[in-house]
Length: 386
Image (cartoon, rainbow, N blue to C red; front, side):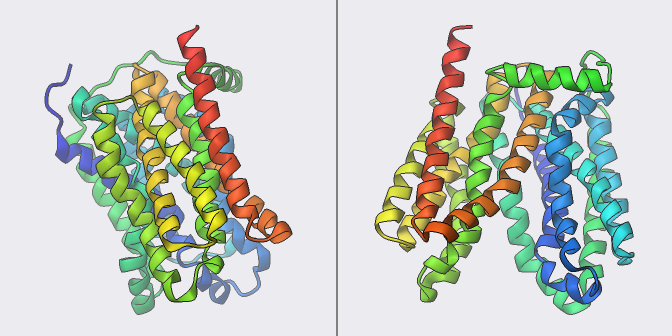
């Protein structure tokens, strides 16, 4: 058992996660630049962002199986080097079909990172530090998007989109070199698993039949369904004089609560209990926002309660699954369900709000939070009685 956590290595793995999140963010944050670069593309430009997530839906579990088979260090380094090469290629602004092809390959690189890195973090941490380390990992998307807003967009304004893509390529290469050296002495042995369509199907059945392996992913589905969609649909309903502050503060509040209150709770109760507190608090906050539409304090409270779900969901993976192989399966399922939630959340939320007005947002999100909590309760009951 590991007694002392190598925090420098944990931070480096988290830094690799920021690069993985930027694989989404580098084009979503600069999407308004693309029509000028590809003026004849039309609606096809949407695939520049979404194709990464669509691959995650279909190959999330397969990524967990593949990462376990080719070993975690090798998978992580392959994903980093591939990500660096693809960003460097994209910096030349290739024709749209080639850009889309590179984004599809980048989706596989992204999956390798988000499966291998948290699995490695769980294995190198002392048990007492695992909750803190995986809560830190859970902030990687929010932090990466904040960095892109604060540093990436000014770089694009100064030198254009190719400069941001080249910077991302350099970032990924630096982390590949550093982690290649730091992880060279790390071995995590797992039994070799046959990699075939039949095995991938069996892996899906194994994961989603297991109340331990599937639990973090099922809860994550309901979280991701709400998080991005709320940030997308909510702004017009917030008073204009406070809108910019609230929308900028919500992701930061979520991260802050996750890293403080969330970590403190993980030291005294289980990760699933923290998730349930987060879902219950989020559902109650939606009643607040239904009664007082767009209330700034209600919005920040919502971000705070969702922050509990965010960090504890990753901490639940090693608490419920005790081998690297099952943790990789669980992380692959989290990636898969997260992409399902992100893909469905915004269009469904937008259609609901468009059909019945503002009330559609707290109604739909509130129901999703309740269902997320109920799903965790059902799975916990199954774990106790199996």
